[in-house]
Length: 264
Image (cartoon, rainbow, N blue to C red; front, top):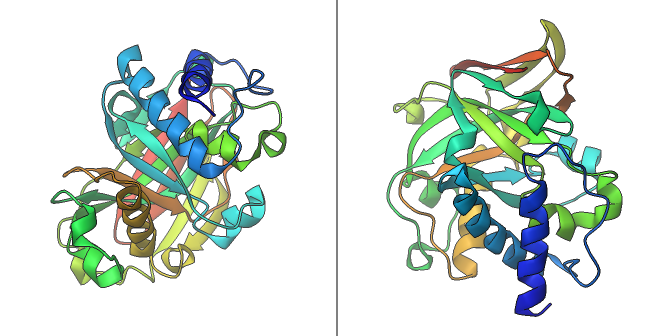
């Protein structure tokens, strides 16, 4: 794709974001052919969304980091999307149903990084990336099925559009997280007071911080940095729960606490 096609694809996606209008296909000549190109479209989209008053990008989500979600979506590797300031709330979130096509929630562990992470700090493994984590918290990721058929859009199309990302609710930040066994935390998701499923933190690539290491490699490998204080959602412990207007959901993760969200 040339620069004009990249910009046209990003403009098309930005025009649909938070409008409640589903995407069936990209315009002619604007479909990203592979994931590398999709991340270029995504970068252009982030610039547009920032100017559309979503505020700055304050972090990322990492999707498809558990077998549950890889099986559900039919994608066998992690994918990243942007997270924007005005779409992040604390503790008890509320989002407008009219801006969403089909709202969903996912049970997440989030980290907030300390210092900036750049290529010169790599390579990254669990032990090294842990040194760049300031705190950890429970989180709900709000996702939006903005597509007539996500399987037909393909992985590059989903990546270009931030891989379903629509917002997040973050819980209390825990600074003394190093005292926790990050591989043994049980997470539970409830919708309207009824259980939707449970998972354990080791489901995230064997260790949640392996998802952060993957993101660090992904960003720095393409010449980018992860700014200090970035919020990163590491992947869902439970299969996505799709909501209807008026629904509410809550997530609890052992030793991290609870957060809730409603779609109104």
